[in-house]
Image (cartoon, rainbow, N blue to C red; front, side, top):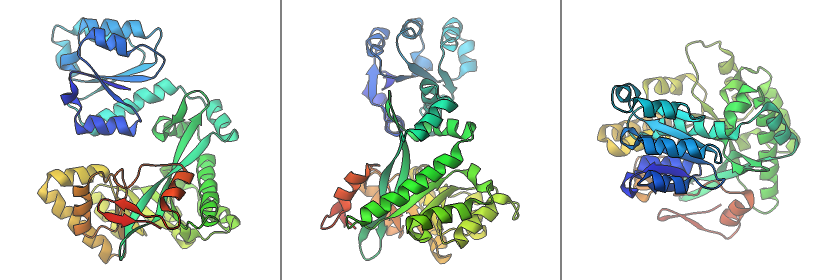
Length: 389
C-alpha cells in the first residue's frame, strides 16, 4: 500500500506509476487519525509525505505504528528549509524512524520510485543465506511480458523473462526489492544462469504446445567482466537443444571510452556466439547515440522516461523519430517500453517503431497465461491492432 496525504487529486500519474511498479495500491489519508487507521494490520506500507504533510500528529502516528507494522516513509521535501521552520522537532522524530528515505521536493517519478525501492528493500531484510536458500529451493520464478512486433501486421514473437521471488512468507516479491542484495552478496552469476536455463526450458515447453516464442533476458552489468560468460551461456543453450539466436540479452549502457574494456569484449563474444543484443534503457542522450555506432547491438530499447518526455515535448518527439531512423539505417530494430495508451501506440507506429512493450499490450504474466493468450487460433488486441503468434 502507498499512503499519500490529501485527496485523490494528489494521485498524479507519477505516483500511479510508482505504485504499479512496486505492486502497491494507492490509498489516501486526510488526517493523522485516518493514517492511524490505515496503518493497522500486518501488510507492508510506504507513506509518502511532502513538506505540507509533516506534523506532530503524523510523526506520533508513525512512531506508534512502528511497534506493530512494517512500513517505510518517503519524505519529498526540502530538508534544509524545514529545519529553519517551526518543524525542526518533528523532523527529528521522523529521522528516528527505522526506515526513512529523504528525497527532493516534488512528485517526480524517478526520485519517488528510487526512494520507495529503498524502503521496500529494508522491509524485506534479505540475508545471503535467505537468497541461497531461495536458489536451492526453487523460489525464484519467471514471469513473461510479451512484445508486439511490426511486420505486415503486429504480432508477438518474443517475451521478456522477468525474475520474481515467490517468498514463502511474503508472497510474490519483485526484482527491485532483492536484486541489489543479489549483487551485494555476489550471487548474480548463479541467478543469471538460473534465468537462462529456465527461459530455455520454457521455450521448449511452449514449443511442445504449439507456441513458438523467443526470449529476452536482462543481463546484469556485473556479469560483463566474466571472460568465460559467452562460452558458458552458449553451452547452456546448446544443451537445451535451442539456438543462441532464440535469446536476446538486454544490456544497460556501459562506459565506451576504452575499446579494450572487458565488458566490450564480452558483449562482442556474445554476439559472435549468435546471441542477439539489445541496448537497454536508451534515453536519447549523446552518450546513448555514441553507443549505437560503437557496440554490436541488434536492437535499442527506448526507456519509458524518454517516452514520457517525448509525449510532453515536441522537440523530443522529433529527436525520437530521428533516432529511430538512425537505428534503422544501422540495421537495428527499435523497441519502446512503457507503452500504456493508444495515443502512445499510434505515435510509435507513425515513427515506425519496430516493437512495443507495456501495460497496453500486457503486464508480465505466468507462462501458462501467456500461452493461453498467444497460443494457436488465438488473437489478442493490442490497441486497435490484432496481435497473436
